[in-house]
Length: 177
Image (cartoon, rainbow, N blue to C red; front, side, top):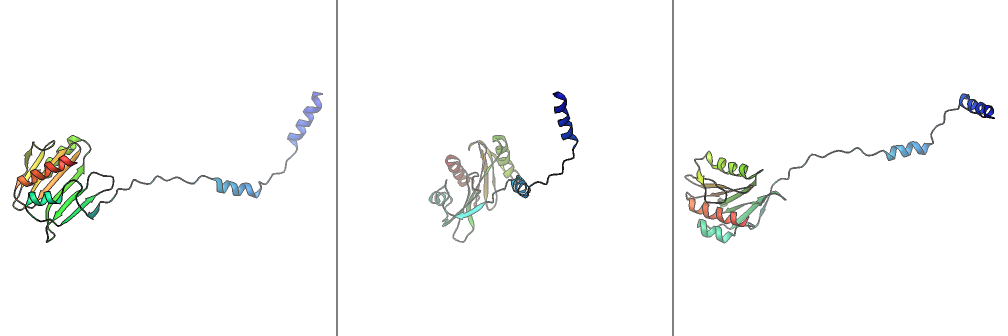
């Protein structure tokens, strides 16, 4: 009994079988079901956006009182989702009376280093009484004060040769952000 079954099996293996063409729908299905290639898009760096609007952390009236100049035009510049925007308070002639820049550092040490370096090249001296410290430089036509506040670097530039205004504005900004 085993012998006839073995013979049938051998006969089936030895007989040539004609090649079978795949149905046309299989080829089409393979083409359409193939996964789409995936690409990893490089992260896009958002461009800063400048808008004429009030500064979110510093009132125009306060700036005008501190610097003693009218600043009818205020613009903010920032990256959506980034640190608080920078603010520029312009005089009626369009020249900046005061600017505030805020950037994000990797850590508090990097923030303080960036603040000190910001004024080091323009004759800055140390500031230890505002936030986490930094430096200030008083020039012939402006004062630049840069301080670290955690991982933020706050830079205040006033169009005057007075550190008092820069200090007062920096303290207000640090208190608000």
